[in-house]
Image 1 (cartoon, one colour):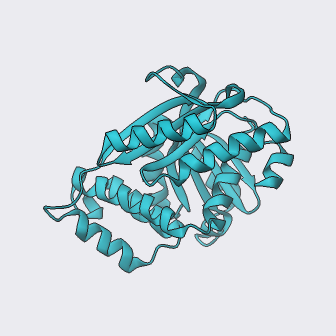
Image 2: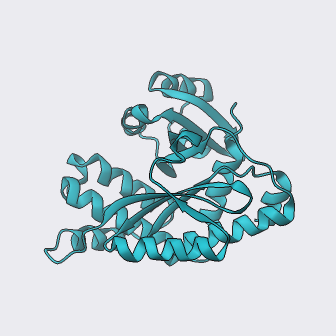
Length: 251
C-alpha cells in the first residue's frame, strides 16, 4: 500500500460532513455543465456526464437539481467554464496544486493569488510542481454497493484488477481503488458493467512524497487550503503535506 488512504479518507469525510453543501453542489453543477457542453445532454452517450451524475448522487444532490443543471447547461446563454490549473508553494514549502472551473480567468487567478499572499504562499509557473504529483484515478466505493450485487470481496478485487486497478484499500466500510490516469475510463466502464455505484470517482493529484509538519505549522497550511477551497471557482486543492493522525483529528 502506498499510504494514500489518509488523503482519500479525509477527502471523503470532508465531503460527507461539510456544512457548505451549496459549495459541493456548485462543484458538481459546474462539472455537469462542462460535460453537457463537451458531449451533449444524453448520459447514455456521454461518459463524462454519467460520471458527473454518479458523483452528484454520491453527495446526495437531489435528482431535480441534477435535471435542472443538465437542462440549464444546454441553454444558449449558459456560462462557458474553462478548466484551469494553478501550482503554488504554501508556507513551510508545502506544494499545492489547484484545479478550477471558471468563466473568468482573470478573477480566478486574482482571487487565488490574494489567498496565497495572505497565507505566505506564492504562485508558481505552470508545470513547476507537476513532478511532485502523480495523476491517478481514485474511486471510492461503499462495501455495501458491492455486497448488494452478490459479489464476494475476492471476486470484486479480481474484476477491478483486470480493469487496471493498481491498488485497492479497504477501510471503514469503503473500498478505495487507484488506477493510472490512462486506465480511469476502463475502470468507469467496469463499474458500469458490474452495476456497482461509486460514491465518488475522479482524477486526483497524489503526492509522490509528503512533507511532515508539526501541529501548529500544519494548521496554518490547512487554513490556506480551506481559504482556497472556499473560492467559488476552485474545484479541488491537492497538496503534499503529510496527514498524520494528530492533524486528521484536528480536521
